[in-house]
Image 1 (tube, rainbow, N blue to C red):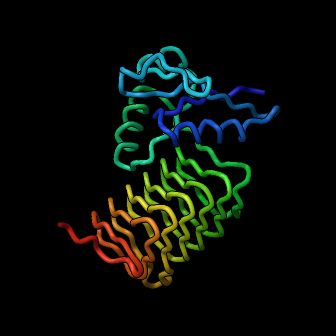
Image 2: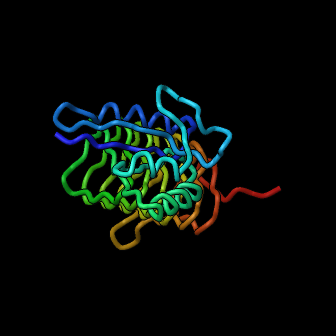
Image 3: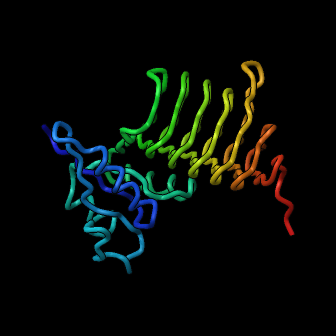
Length: 219
């Protein structure tokens, strides 16, 4: 029995939810413990959130040299920057999958993935590095999720959908299926608004909203 220490990068609401996820993962046979939140804002150092201390990256690495790191930051772009810093400092990313996630054995998970309670992942799915899947999402067959992609709570992804890197999908969005020969693609850094219904591919860097989802018109 070896205790796995986990440092969570971020100290906001989702970081505290990730700490709860770690508690649910921990068992007597395979114990986990959150040892700290990491925050780049020095004004927050020394605080204690839900019994867990907040400190800077250097202090966390010095105090907990054997800890793994995972992100508690929802923004894909900020998550990429902070995880790059954490790995450069010597941290190894943890992969956290809640025990109440339903999943087949035909799924690959990249390092640093966080999958919260209540999700269903079917078959032949590829999940990249540092992907976050929040509460109560469904992901259909042959989906590819690029690194640092985020699904907010209650997102439903149909089969043959391919996400690029750093995609953000808002709460309650629905993405309709592509096909084997023509997967529906969501380009790098695209944003899908909350409640949107995506019926066609989305170019890189574009924000779409509404039913059916259309590019957001800038004022």
